[in-house]
Image 1 (cartoon, rainbow, N blue to C red):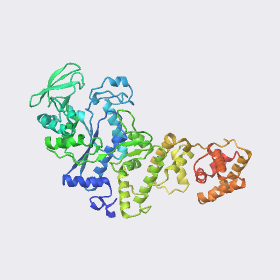
Image 2 (cartoon, one colour; image 1 turned 90 degrees about the horizontal axis):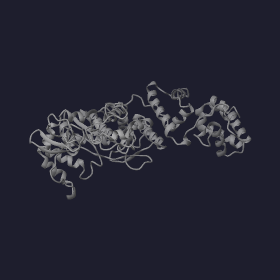
Image 3 (cartoon, rainbow, N blue to C red; image 1 turned 60 degrees about the vertical axis):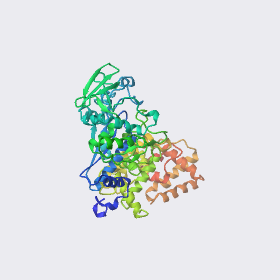
Length: 542
């Protein structure tokens, strides 16, 4: 939105319209005025990174946008926790037996079973890094394996060792007696330099940089210098707050499991402040995402996932972003690939019309809310011209009429009088690609159709054939004379009355003649969409 609208960057009047804006204001309020604010997200690439994980990415990105729209400089970092342990082979991975040989290795040292990338971790990282630009998301990626192996966190690990009693007390604060830490405890774990596994135990620390350890798998014993060691790392509940201080993180959302009472976020706040001297970032809880028709949350380890690429096959980037921008993060919702897809596109189109004032909102508050959701749904800057709108259901029908030919569909729209500007065509083409995929791969069978070829007649009784002849000669032959679907429908019903056929019987015959099914799209609109010349060819057999 331009500044002349009174809602440009830095104008606080817009800032209650959206939860991302509320969060941006909270960050500035709690962290004070700063030259730059750091917003963080991250995930362990232990398996396919799915749209449940994506919720954290886009939630952070939306807040980053809100900060930048306030006129603030914001850094968006995304951490790949690829130095975590490979604990389980997800069910959707190939070469299960081969991968199982690398259990207890760091994920970054597990080979890529597809043999595309240098490691298993890198394969999953690359999939996301290649998909995010399509959504207009460009984080600064940080690879924790590289950080640890370069001893970037040597001082952070030493500080944890120096404060291990305090850490133990913090971690035990949220545990009952049965689950409190027992015996000697160290805040670091070790990947063996010999066999690469974490089947190790820390034996001692010299009070400075040396950590002694042994490996139960291969029997290796060593004392490693934190400033040079490649295999020593902090446990998660200490590692996370250590990195908040290291990166000076001001904001990071977390899933509701981390935000549960006594969960990792609760302990991390105390570790961050009491051990590392940094106030925990502003945060909010985001909820799980379900898949329509499937119970439970998505899980990389189970292999039951939907990826960003899967999402973008059905939803254009702006509609995919709308699913998240239009829902508060602490609200659970379901991603659908069935007929609900049509409703999602309808909802987005309504928001678009309100945002461009092509449809009047009931009040100014709703206009500002819908406009802001629309802005944040765009992968890039706002378009200069409102995109050409065509209902998704109708577009699916047009593409099937065109035999799946997208360019033919776009050309037919232009020839049919659509006021298509050059700047609108690429957005329309993207919607066509999604509509074709959905119609081909996701839509229920009753939604799909194929137009008959000329000469490919249906097996009709004499009465039905006569009705189809009159439908051709009395309706299709003068199709261009109908100003709208209503007048065309009236002519169709007149044919039925002339043959003493009720509407249901006539429509069934028409659909059988055209697509070989008992039902189909609304007939009047369907006829007008197919066009006179093609219909005359199909119905010539009668």
